Each structure stands twice: as C-alpha cells, then as structure tokens.
Image (cartoon, rainbow, N blue to C red; front, side, top):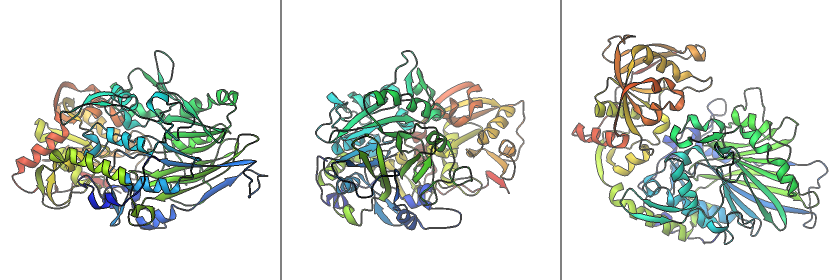
Length: 593
C-alpha cells in the first residue's frame, strides 16, 4: 500500500452519507431459520476458516518448493467511502478498510482483487463526483507497479472485474471511469480524470461487432517468479438488470464457458494457478467446510458456474449478493473449488491464502476467512490517515448540496418490507412518483431504494443515498389486461419475487400457490375495479419502462411521456406536504398464506 495509518477519519470524517446496516441491509440479518444468530454473531461466525490442500502435499512446506501468496478480496463497495453501523457498532469506510488491508498484507506476496459493483448506487460523496473518488481510493491501495500506462504489468498488486452497476451511467461512462477522460460533474466542475491504475478483466463481455472482449479477459500476475492468472466475468443475465442501452452492441457469454475457453491459452503460457473474479453470488447461512449441493443448502447460478469450471480454477472470488460466502464447492470432476464473498460496502474482506507448488505452478493449498472491518477494534482503531484526509476532502466538496434540508420525517421511514412485501418508504416513493406525473398508478421496485430515512430533517444527501440511480420517471398507457400481466410478472422466475410498491392500487397474492399462479387479484385504491379494456396511465422508472427486472409488458406501453427524475419527484413531494411526512397506511399489498 502506498499510504500508512492513523485514526484521523473516525474523528474528522463527514458522515452525512453513512447508513445503518442493521436497518437497511437484509443480508446482514443473519440466518432466518434455525440458528437465529444476531448480526454480530453471524459476522463472528463468518471468520471460520475454510481450507483445503491437495493429497500428498505436506502440511509444513519449505520456501524452496512452495510459495505462499495472500489474496485480499472485496466486492460491492458501491462508493461507500464513509463508514456504516451494524448493531450499533461502527464498521467499514475507506480508511478503516485500508487499515485492515494493510494489516493483512504480506509484503511482496499480496494481491488485491475486487469482484465488481465498486461504483454505482453510491452515496453522494462518490456519486456526485461520478464515482471517481471510489476508483481513486482503490488506486491508493495499488502499489508503485500499477499505472494507467502499464495496466498489464505483472507486478501490479491489483485487479478488478465489472459488475452490473458499473453500467449504470452507460458503457461510455464506465469505460471513461476505467480508462480516464474529462467529465462535467453534478456540481458544475469539469475535471480530467486519470482513470484506474489497475486492470479490469472480463472474459464474457464481448463486443458483438468485433468478437473481442470489452476489456482483457484475464491478467497474469507474478509473485517471486510464480504466475497467477485472474480471469473476470459478470453474471450472464446482466442485460436484464441494467438499462438496455448500456449493453447495446455487447454479447454476454455463459460465464463458465467463457472462463474455460481461456484455460488452454493460459496453459500455453505456463500458468496453472488460476483465480476467477466474478460478479455473481449467493447468500450462505451455514459455516461448514463443504457445500451441500442439491439438498437445499446451496444453489443458484454461482453454484452452477462453479461446478462447470476447469480443474485448474482453484478459487472463485464472488460478489453481487451482498452476502457471506466461504465454502468448498466440488466441480463436475470432483475438484474442490474455494468460493468466497465478503458482504458489501467495505464492511468485510476475503482474507485468502494460497500455496503454489513451484515445480508444477499449480495451487496445492488454499484457505479463506471473511473478516469484518470493525472500526472499534484492531486495525480499525488506526484508520489510514491519507485515505481519511482524501475522503474528508471529498465530503467537504459535496457538503453544500448534501446538507440542504428538503423535508422532514415524522418518524423512521424504513425500506424494509413487511411479510406481504410492502415497504413504507417504497410506497411513499410510489405516491411521490404518481403525484409528480398525475398518473392512475405508479410502481416502484425496492432494488432501486438503497436506504431508509431517519426521523427528523431530511437532507438532500439522504435522498440521494436512498435513490442513487437518479432514474427518470416514465408515464405510459396500459390496458387493464396489460396491468394484470404486469402483476403476474412479479413472479416471472421461480425463486425470485419482485414485489412492486404500488400507488393507486391494491393487489393480492398467495404465497402458497406455484410461482406462476401467485397473483390473485387487484383493484384501484378506492375500491373500483380495473377494467381489462380500459386504458390507464402508469408511471415507472426508465429502467423498468425498458423491461428491467423482467417486467417486459412495460415495453408495450403507448403514449409514453418522460417525466422528472425520481429524486426530484420525491423532494417535491416532501415540500408539498408542508410539514413532517408520515409513512403511508399499509394495505396496498395483501398476502394470503
């Protein structure tokens, strides 16, 4: 690391954009079934070490025959440069994360990786400056061998991959953030951004016209003469969760097939130690060494990808689920692959050790633990001083806009939904969107609502944090029959329910029904029926208007009219209330069984 440590950040950092993980991050609530661990207990259990070594490999290995390498992984930082809280305890923040990484590093034998969504859906300290501060922070973790001019330098200690949120502002802006270039930001400044000093890799994002990958598929690092390849990938269905224009002209390949296709090329270069960095993941609720696949314990896309990987892929650093993962997953040949993920927002990191057999160049031992970056203990008590100063300067830069009071909350407005799937804050946002567009109905998906609102004054920065995507509102006409299809698309894929937050409508669903039969009925909020042949005006975000999250019926809308940005609609709604805002009365979403 280029910088060293101090406790300055905890004293001086501007904490406007901090959020409470114990309230807003459902992944951090711990198991919901038998163990019922508290958030702190779950984090403590996450430090359980999972390990593997090849048969015949001695437990005590000499430096002449074997090389030990440290890999430190993060995922889903989302620009959270300031700290968080969990169960009342401080954790995370760029300076605290930097202190933990520094403490874990083995000089000359440490590599740092990130598994995507480092930027996007970010608090104001990063979002208002086009997420450049977040990449600049990561550049501070890079060593002197890393530079924009020599991204393939094998002695550079860092590498990252692309997640879905890197596409939030479109492909050109994603590439500008990676490669550098000028930008006029939200507060009117034109800056020349120098770009990432470390490489981004992805094997399955291909430019359709050329057939070449958008960024290099892999990079080879060298540690004391031994080669380690890092291949990147993004979830194959990324096009369904980003704006279509962002992936126009790109083909997203099957993750495992794309990764495996480069193994012969790596073998030709004498590389047998291979790590996959992938923006795809799952939530793991047990702390055993091995996955139980096919028995309800672990399942999903990342398990399928891992099972189909080549035997020479020993480690998968994952993300996307904002969750804990640390487990050995056997591939289809029985080779055990270590799969890890370290929550989100810089509140934890993967602490991974691998051992390379110098004779074969292969990984013969591996272990990992997921370390929480508590700010009130250990390395967290001495945050990195220069990172702290950097973050404090960025907070000060955006402070005039961030601290402007735009409304008041009469009580805590939570984003967390009830058992029916209805969120007080989600419904309030839907009400604001309908008021801004004079529509019959407005719908909001909670994936775009990233924080709750505390009681009291509501600052612009808080609104920006909870609506970080700055989606434009789109109003269209749909028939009642199309609206019914829209309701059914809340359960378009088994295992995934996308419960809409509704304004102007009440709908009922049955949790005991099969996935494609869960929708039961709907009506207008005043009790009037919704007629199949009648046209209704409907407001959604531009993301959903283009079919995002599987709501493809919205692409059939007619008389489409663009409206204000969602953040402006919510602020206008607060102002129009003329006083503190209370959560809406529940009952727009009714669950049976």
